[in-house]
Length: 288
Image (tube, rainbow, N blue to C red):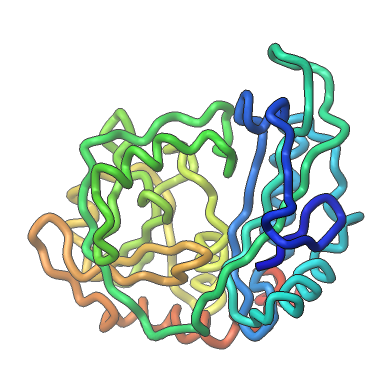
């Protein structure tokens, strides 16, 4: 398997990062996960906008536009022979002296690797399971997709490796937050609901896409502070993330949900199927 590392496509065994990289020493790094469908990197521009914003917050000096990521993805996909794939773009701060640094990081390490995934699959249902572990608060006012990931790992350990289950975080104040690696939506009386960013969740790229699609097709939506009872009283629900796409919920806390038969879930997935191979940004939904 080949990967992209600091300007070169190399066999994965040849990629080396110094132990003095502050991504390793202090968690100063960010990543994005995304998919290609027949070679097309779905919503790539939105992933790069979020990543660039995070790099600016971490004071990591890198202009992602200068890297020509679309060309890198195309070259890597051709080298690996993987038109349908999982992609992870990882930026770590780079080498530094021991100690907390306030100066900008000028020479980050850039890593892009992929693994094989099947083409777009039919909807796959999961059970939502409430976690005992609470969602931690982000380091800043906005949660970054950063190397600080142990809260998610600890949650995954709690829920286990069953692929048919997704853990659901509450905040310390008892509000619905997000899945271990996903955002959550539910429907009540025709309105689509999702927790607000105020809860400290990651503003997922697929989350943003779903909201845009809902607006386009006339589904009302709301984001706010909600309790477990709000989800239990809903008519259908689903998780989203960039790799697993739309994941219908078939049960939660002993209550059955329609799963992949949910009316709005199916409607949104129809648009996802159509858009996955063509869109680079959610803004294209509105011709902007």
